Length: 202
Image (cartoon, rainbow, N blue to C red):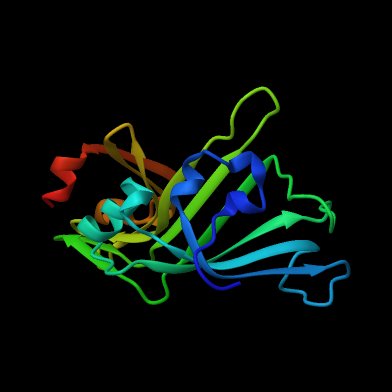
């Protein structure tokens, strides 16, 4: 498909939600009822370029002002599941659309390097409530730690919580923390929250 595309044109329940502020281009929808392609799921798969504009809200600000991603256009994909029909609109209770900027890194402040940057859009829907909309930035980051030879690698999620930019980071495995030999830390978490004004000044 060419031109601007809104997801609500094929998923009516998303009409009028924040998904209508999100523009997709170069859309393709692939269907397989048998696992011909082992890298694709059964049923329908959605592939597109996600055009991240100011209308996308906080994720645009975080990408451009904090992480320094210029003209953020990202190839994303999603699985609509195997139970869709040819003649009816797409119906989903949960939807995740995500992709990662190839080769993008960012060092917004001394000692912190975001080594991978991805965007995830999520929606959950129950019959008695309108669909939710959650947009987050995720990936891996390195943090310089006193006493350590190599930086600490963490999985992170950046999100907007009512005007507050929140950073959640976890350490899958930390060997010799703070330079203390022979100790291993697993599944440690770090939580930070900043106002947008403060974090933009980093």
